Length: 192
Image 1 (cartoon, one colour):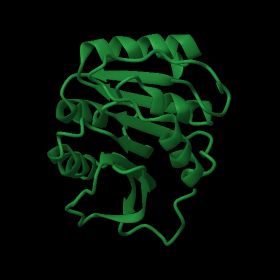
Image 2: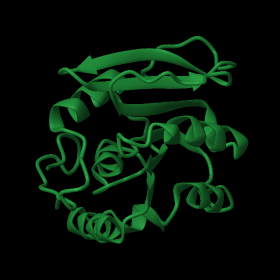
Image 3: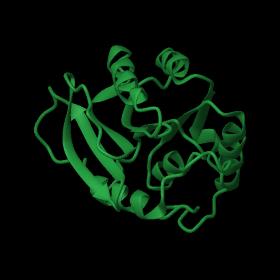
Image 4: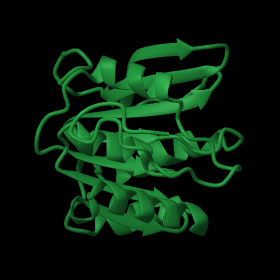
């Protein structure tokens, strides 16, 4: 695992446990090619953060702040180690525990609205997608012109009423990326 572009390009990252599946470099590269330039001063929420690789990639590409939410203690330690390794501790916050509780705590914090939210739960927890989207809406965590990115293994049948899918990409046989925005957002492309 490594940072693929930006300020910390080429920096190797520590991997979490075998039970955690980091986003593959080719998928990460495709994701950021779709988003194009990351707006300076933007904030990102890396939900189900694993090793923290996605949030760190956003920071390397110009985001000002990354918030990481993760349940597993071993992964939390890996995120801390990676942030220290790349020198982004001051630009980051880590929330440990159940994602529902973490989302609520994040909504009560100083950094409570995001330009980008990346959601990548364990692939066998399909119900987490809809639940996380509902919580994000209820807690007003996404900025008006923000983008939500979902990574899944296979097709998702999402219950989208507040959000709309503006782009979907398939990688290999199974990996899917979905890009969502608020339905009331002005017409625009995925890139900001």
